[in-house]
Amino acid sequence: MAYLEVFVPPHRRPAPGEERFVDGIHLGLGGAFNTASVAAALGLPVTLCAPVGGGIADLAVAALAHRLGIALEPLAARDDPAISLVFSS
Image (cartoon, rainbow, N blue to C red):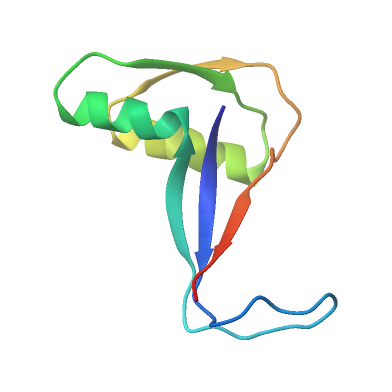
């Protein structure tokens, strides 16, 4: 699976129903995208087969793959797959 990881910088995770304002949100690569991006950076030809739908997160994954020189062989998937959230402490 290839997905985006969202890094949120507050010092603590918000309580259920609590809204927090942050200075910024950082996106990263997750899952098989990590290995694919390293291989592409080494100049190897890379094709990533992963579930990709048509939602906004899926479009971001496809755009990033193209930017990194990773050929994407999408498998059918629902739109907007899971995105992991990481809170720094």
